[in-house]
Length: 332
Image (cartoon, rainbow, N blue to C red; front, side, top):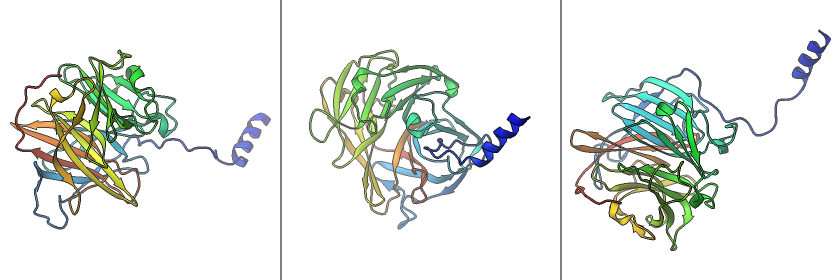
């Protein structure tokens, strides 16, 4: 009993842990609300931006302080999966009414380090195999790629590709895509490529968690002043790349580019075709996540923003139809 009272007294008198705080996690149960946002606050009826038609969008809100920071997005039918740059996972269903329901909060079951700090769960990119449901996530700082079971239920494998070993701790695998033929492409955020103004990219013939060496390297030239933040493969075989620019104090802009698949080849320097620019009075924030889906014959692009869990930014989820893009039969 004396020992028990001594322990209780120590717990009462000792100050709280003063080291780096633990990564905030989402609660077991909670809600997500969605508020409609216009494409252009100065022209509320506007629906076009470049080759995109705006189909609607919302600002998402959820339990603080863990909600937000979204860097990766997956859309399957009416089911949405958002992964934050701290490993938190938000899933919900949402239809034409833009009301989230069937909300589920969780966190990645494993990853680099213990997961105590945000830097150990700096998950920046996500892709999946629609046939198996397996999911791959790219982690900055660790410069690793992890594979997870369907539904992110458990970690299955992890790899540290030699090609990514020297990428900056905060400029690593920002963009990751699994192509329909099973190949993978990964883009660094700010690792300099073969020429000034480019970033490094690598192509893997298969699962990068199983291949320590890339098939080949290439360089991507984003629009001047921008950095790539996400990448998807379109139904026609082209790649859509989301690019972001930050200017102090809190000014973001974005450009969406298209790249023919045939342009991705060994030692190539790839420049995308600009199809939409988010600047001026058009809605914009720290756009980091891009996903693609289909609605009948239409190609739908979804963009989500990372609010850095800061009050001056927003967690946006925007929906666009991609118009006027010819089909391509290019192959890697």
